[in-house]
Image 1 (cartoon, rainbow, N blue to C red):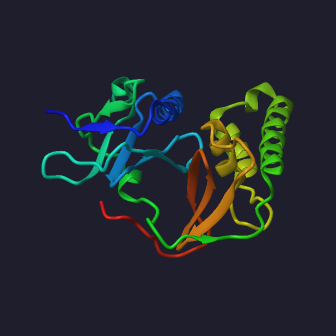
Image 2 (cartoon, rainbow, N blue to C red):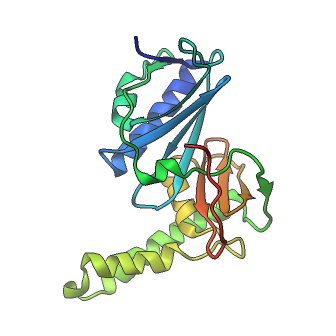
Length: 221
């Protein structure tokens, strides 16, 4: 018998399906790590183009339970999970897969503190738009023989690694949040815990390691 997830409503299932579809857009073989305890499901993914950890939560209709298990912690295929999502508000948990390295190193579950200095939502979206425009313009200026992967990757790292103000949060984190559908509405926060920074909105979070911060905080595998 396959473990089942029962979401609080159809909207929760639809939002999770949209998140999974966006991950698969960037990586057809994407894996996600699922952690469910009580009435909350956390889904972690890593879109390779952005080098960030994306986090989407969903409310469950009742505390998770499957046989004697009262919590869930497993890495599965994002595509198989997406296929199992029932629009009415449930999903089957696919068979576990061998997780990619990132799945064993997650941000801490607690200890998050607010960080100052993050601009408002409109300003953050504007920064992302400006960075995209700059990348396209600079690529267009390159001679044809220099438009190779190594050159484009170097240019991308230069632009997307820039910090948003003095926060230490790279622009690529905001770019990822926008690409994954998180930069909606007006509410966003910047949080820190140990070596991690986390850009959070009501629609999801993006977490990155802070540059130059030693030590690594992890959740149990």
